[in-house]
Structure formats: C-alpha cells, structure tokens
Image (tube, rainbow, N blue to C red; front, side, top):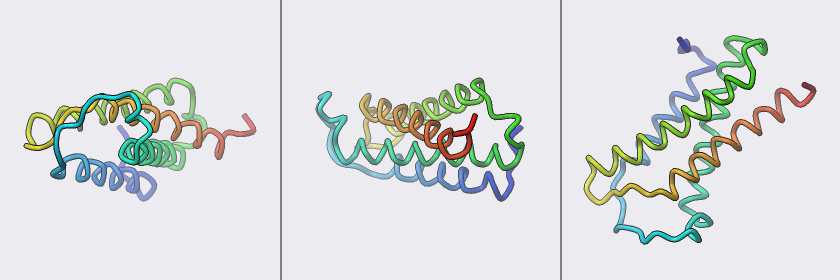
Length: 128
C-alpha cells in the first residue's frame, strides 16, 4: 500500500487537479486527426501526466528509498498513468455531457507518463 505522506501528497493533489480538469465542461465533439497530437490541448495532457508520474515516483522514492526503484516499478507506474488517463476519458464520456472520449488524449497521457519516468530517471538515477 502506498502511504499518504508529505512526499506522496503532491501526487495525490496533482491527480485530483487532473480529475477536475478532465471532468470540467468542454466544447464540441472533436474530429479525429493524427495532426491533433501536436495541439496545445495534447501538450497539456502530456505535461500534466509527465508531472503526475514524476510526482508519484518522487513520493515512492522519498517514502521507500532507492531500493524499491526498479524496472518493474516503472512499468507499474506507467500502467497506472495510462489507466488513470483512460478512466478519465471513459468517465467524462459516460457522465459529463459535452465531453467525449478522445483517443489522442490517451496517447498524449501515455507519452507524458513515459516522459515523467524518463525525467525521474535522469534526475535521480543518472549514475545508475
């Protein structure tokens, strides 16, 4: 179980911010285009999930120490980020009028999650 401590609290707060922004009212149904992956909205998803995953890893690192940081943890955290993003997309589609499931958002969430892992590795594990 991941304890709620002063080190994990930023990740929890950031996750709540993501939920609030994901479930807020939005405009019209978007048209699907791969070019939309390079839009301000997708850059926002990427950035928010990069920060989210970084904060999760930082909380685990500060709570449990470097000995628990391994490849298996990175995969679990990546799957958590992707799953959280997918849940937000499905939830907003099902329960919030004017909000839609956007495949490109989920791709941006996953890419952001990977970037968060890479930034964490670079900052805390660059000598490993």
